[in-house]
Image (tube, rainbow, N blue to C red; front, side, top):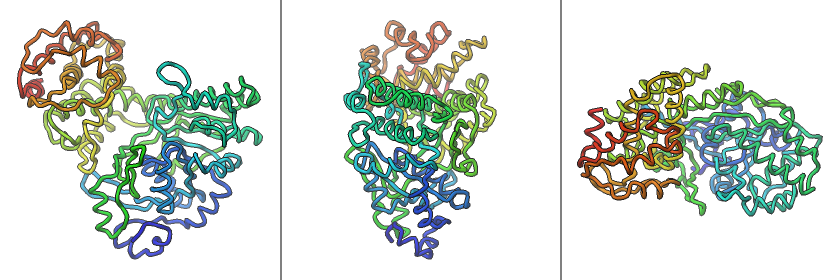
Length: 532
């Protein structure tokens, strides 16, 4: 059976396959969206299909909304062509539960899918609808960038600033989005909410800064009147709320493809696009999910609170993010990443069968993190960690690898651990008493040598600071006894890497000692984990 509109009519097949169908009239939904869309989403990747699209599916199933989502892909057009158009905008969503069971359903909440390089006319029309309430984004943090590392605008952005809001002539993703906003502005400055759902701190501000910069450039270049800049800055007209999203959505997994094929579905093979995007007619994701959004919607919003989305104030969104990123999830992930690579693991779920590693992340989270955790009020930190350790990380269906999570660790540690150290120092608690967090730091330095605990070389994951860090640690090898102070001090003293100077925090010497112990011989990393 092929996945398309026609096949949905064969309810007996889908029931036998254990796949739940949409519970609404999809034809009517598509027609209603065509003339009165409420929600446009930018970024048609796996997280969108498994989370925001599934949320809309739920409220459509319950009869709480009559329109669906218009999704626009502006980076990789092959996603639209091969994962949406080829399957009538339908997706098989497979929820992978920690108890080994799965839940399978057809997501049919996408009414229209568009490529921003060739199909802008309807998108322009949608942005002129008074009905449009929100535009949301999952385009990754780098998708909001206007400038390169040298501080100058990317060429396509520079060109777009000179061109002005002429949609068909613009080259950049963000320029086109700003032009769509301008379309809404010239239609009596209709209100809208621009919701970044990307996993980056204060994401709404990042999106706002991009739109404001482009609007300001157009005004200065006399390509738009000053009222457009005022419109972008008017929170009662255009709001840019903060949000916190949390749901693990790995690449389409072969075991899921095999399961769906065994159910009788055809053409379920995965695709790697020319831009190296991994897609398939299905998505696989964990069951646990959180979406917390600042409640700032000047034109109203879909009934997403009925699907579990938490709407709150900006300060609470910030506290939820800090709780997750600085204490309850991300530090645990980083600890598992570096030690997983050292100990030869390729899946996080397998690491969760390792008593030493479980004890490590429990120490990082419960013992050293919770005493200074940011409590958001709407989610209990301890319960969040309980779910992470007991349900999410051990999930055997989640094919997440420590090697992937270890990417860019030098950028992650200052936030994931440095904020905890700052909290200890601010509250007068003694950082020198910590033992699990410095163990992670020592493990990261040991990991950077690219030699596992058995003495075998491995590929260190990409990191923007990798070259300089490896140069600083050059000459250190397994079996050496130190001392290594002269090589470690330039690293451990930098707040760039740890958020604080570890010597001033009373941890520098401890990290040096642990690092030295881990270098003693093959098996020394395991021995230190057991001892500590």
